[in-house]
Image 1 (cartoon, helix red, strand yellow):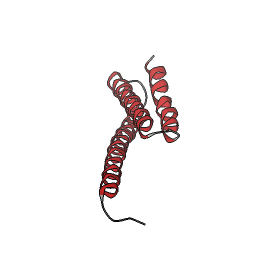
Image 2 (cartoon, rainbow, N blue to C red; image 1 turned 180 degrees about the vertical axis):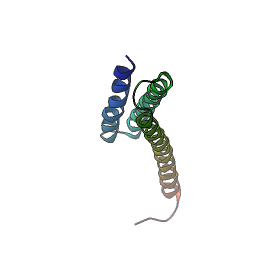
Image 3 (cartoon, rainbow, N blue to C red; image 1 turned 120 degrees about the vertical axis):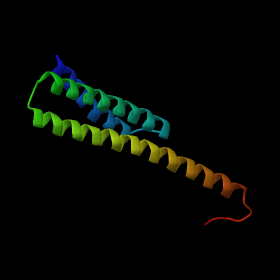
Image 4 (cartoon, one colour; image 1 turned 30 degrees about the horizontal axis):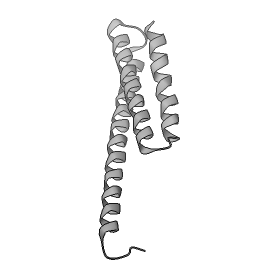
Length: 104
């Protein structure tokens, strides 16, 4: 049961990340990344549970848990960067449109 749930959530991470890369808008990109984050976090839960009850090789579970934690951190950072980048572009666009000079 745990193995099946882990397989489902872990494969969902890859599938949703692939969809995020093809997003048509920033909003869609961030929405998909949020799903990726949630599925990666769910995978962490199943890995931690498997380790606690002794399913699988402990070393492998620890390594996979570490990798999953890193993926979650990367996704969270990516979302923050995308939001920050968009805000700064919107701000620059706003300022340039209201200025009296023309930017080449």
